[in-house]
Image (cartoon, rainbow, N blue to C red; front, side, top):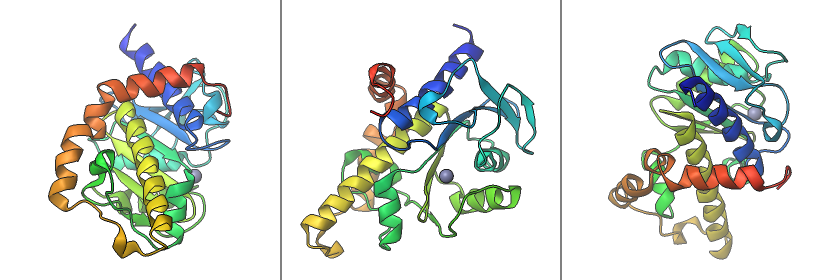
Length: 237
Ligand SMILES: [Zn+2]
C-alpha cells in the first residue's frame, strides 16, 4: 500500500475508532498531516463512524479546502491551527467523550490513576470557554491552551489530542477517556472525596507513560486492537 493510501486509511480508521469506542457519536473528527506540508486529511461533515478513506478533504492551516467532495466539519479550525502552531504534530483527534466532559464540569483536573493514564504525566490543560471552535481565532486559542502538550480538555465539550501521528493521537484519545472514566468511578466509590484517590506520583506516572504511552501503544497492539474492532463492530457500537 502506498504511503498516501496508508495515511488515508489510517484517518478513516481513526474516525471510525472514536465512534465505535464511544468517544463520539454523530460528531467528532480525526485528521493527519500530509507529511512535510501545511495540509491535512480530514473526514467530511458527518459522523466519524461513517468516515470513508476515499472521501476525505484536504484542508490547509489557513482553513482553505484544497480538494475533496463534501463540506468540512465546522470545527476543522481546531486541526488547522494546531498544525500551524505545532510542526511536530502530524495527527489530531477531536472528540466528545462523556467522562472527560464530566471531569471538566465538576472542577476535577485529570489525574493519573492507572498505567495507560501515565501518558498524561505532564497534566492535561483545560480550555475553559464553552462552545464550538468555528473560527481561526478560537482555533488559535485552543492551540495556545494545548501548548506543547498532547491533550487538552475542553469544558463542557470534549477533548483534543495532538501527537506525532494519527494512530498515536487516536490511542491517546482512547486512553484519556478510559482514564477519566476510571477517575469518575473512583470518585464515586470514594463518596466524592477526591483526596481518597491514590493518584500516581509524577515518577510513577512517567514510568508507566514510558511503558504504555500512546507512542508505544500506537506502534503496537493498541492500534492493532482498536482498528481491528472498529472494522467489525457495527455503527453505533
Ligand atoms: Zn467539538
